[in-house]
Image (cartoon, rainbow, N blue to C red):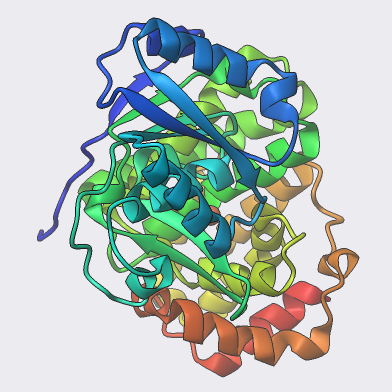
Length: 386
Ligand SMILES: [Fe+2]
């Protein structure tokens, strides 16, 4: 055994805990609140509550409300400039992964010089990253408990995950009551994203004892409760189980890592920004995990069988039981008829997308349990687009 373990985020988990923002010890006095350009945080009253609780806690607020579902480099730079001008000393991300990831990247760029993309491409951080508070309103990304942020550079068609230890939130408030209003299809996409963080982290060469425990437990909870959260969004137990599964999958991403399924998906949604991340992953998943198994069954057999058992399969005798369980889960969350062509993807782009996945996110291929070539990736993407 040889591994690092580091998850420095304080997590307040449970129904109704958002109100503790009014009393919790906070790492700053003036917050930039980051939300998306959609109306939901305002319409549902979450933004007003967050502002009010922060005020009660003696914290001033400034709002940045332009973030897109696939957050862009341009907005990171614009919001960092706003935070600098307003002398903010912490950044609050309220919403789904796009808002919280943006909050992380913005927090990094308030004091660091140059352009964010230079850091994504390897430049070292020189100055302090402002403290980050994450308040997720969806169960999927796990960004509240990991150091990752995914931003798209629209000029270069690159969507790249970037992570350094300074990007762990200082505080995350995970309140499942904030998640009841997520519509069924988004609940399914986001929940499946959390599932793949766990499954990929369990298969990665970087897996370690702690990530294994988190991953199998997440996989078990998601297989059991995501179908119910999709069927009845007001089922608080299902929402709560999914909230924890997602946060725990973030802890998998903190202790292990995603593998190339995520590289491929980022290529898809870099070129098709309307494609939800979770939808891209679901479409890739059966071809992807089947391809790994067909290429080198021995390397994945034990772990596929562990995951199949965690998903409730009985009498698991071969690794294909995981593929069977995955297909069942996709069906049970209502995504069996999902087609990438509905978002405009075309099969003859498969090789270009495979190439982009290696160029932009090649590092994750190094962690795959079975080595994949560009030809393998092209074949998987081609099948996924069908
Ligand atoms: Fe993801």
